[in-house]
Length: 312
Image 1 (cartoon, rainbow, N blue to C red):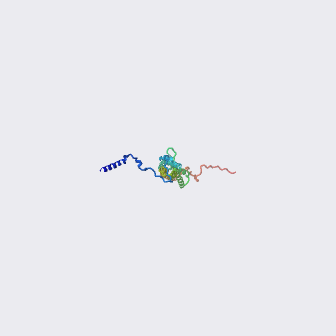
Image 2 (image 1 turned 135 degrees about the vertical axis):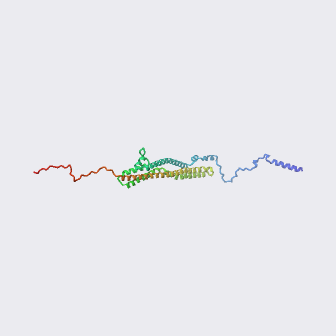
Image 3 (image 1 turned 90 degrees about the vertical axis):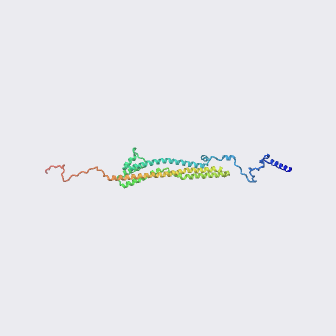
């Protein structure tokens, strides 16, 4: 019994000495988990990126930061697209004001032309108090009056034909004048996406070149170049989409303006036809009165009777 007791006491003492309170260093017993396995001889160990290289990577991914960090070609593409966007909005402002004023003036003149009794009255109504008419509708009326005065001794059908030709030329000239500048909108809308795509391709190409030089596929190296490239495409879309929309709006507005001028041209021809028929129905004035002829049966009171002289 005494031997058993001594064995139990000895076992307890051994357990207490081997426990956590024994003061033995635990770190020495645990294997080093953070140590990298030794590389076999002859194989190069990849070097860790230097802290200076990591600090030099661009971290400003704002639009301005990406623009400043972009390549010179990508910068030129972005500047060109931004200038195209400014041109688009400038044309929109100037052409919208011009088109609104022209449509209002043409509509008012067309109403006055329809309410007039003749072509001369229409010219006076369009001229107004200032006495000088402006606009394509006034040009239509002046062309008809000028041709009527120059062809007063010619046939009616020829006058109408010549007036119709002159009116068609005035309408075409007014339409071309109003459509001036919209072709640039169509050019910007069709080419801006491709210009932005060119900047994107160039930026991505530079990104792959940087990957090959850095010999790493770290996202911190790849992401800035790709973001700069995509920014060029975004600016191209920002320049192209408003240009296409504004061009379509102006195309419909100019078509409506030409329709107003066509209606005014029809009214001018109607007035001209009525005026020519009125001039044909009115008899010409008589400036000379017919003089009655003297009858040959009545002797003239101015006859002088001479006396007879005897012959020698």
